[in-house]
Length: 328
Image (cartoon, rainbow, N blue to C red; front, side):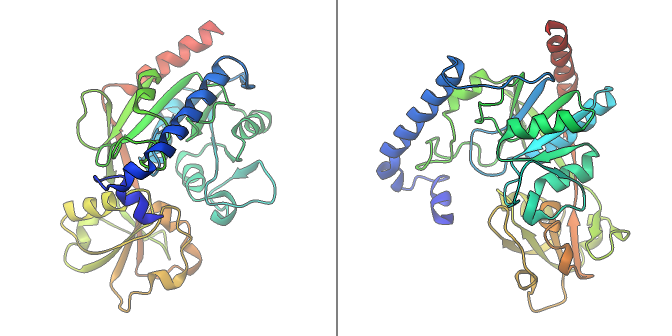
């Protein structure tokens, strides 16, 4: 599967063979969306405003850091947000499942744990987002629902749609699945409320920048180190995220000497994955760290990120929420 993903971001000729299937996929997604719009399919409208944070392409774009940032902005404004998620990578015997900082990634997935830990808000996972949202409203004091991913899950009515775009990979060859990375055609961007670009400046979008914070020791989280303190030693860099090169590039931009070890997105780590035959320090993302705590060693560190978003996006979102509440 990894080889196919790589073809999406170059001019590999296989796209011509897969193009007819992509055309069918695009037709089905268009008809499905129209079915919800024309009320052929049931769409659930909640009593609280719903904000979808998603993307139109497969793979990580930075949705989870943005969701954490958004939760914090809404909390500062006096709102009580809760987050729902698919919980990708987790397998629970029953749903919905409430998430906390100590939840098992094998049950609820990795990203929901990070959100619960960093955003200090209620988080619920379920493959059925309507089910997760109703559980959240029934059991917690929430007045706004944020969906981490779920742009294409039209069974849940939404009031605000925010799309995150990876500025490095963008939309690849611009084909829909399976010839390319798109879940929906690029024209879908014309109908969303806000587009956020994760990375370099984009005049058509609000720009989000991720800044590495202090490294935290995985075996003893009370121990922290500035990222610059790793410059004088060789390091192993581990990333099981949608775009591992983004993490590796950020380390090299901070003048670190790394050996890169990319893994598949949501990789279920085991101790042997991090056995590199030496005692060099190992740096990983926070998303990877939640799956490595059970076999953490003193040479393992993870890098949380701080998020900045330009052009007063937080205020524009809050203004739009106020308009929703007024209309209601």
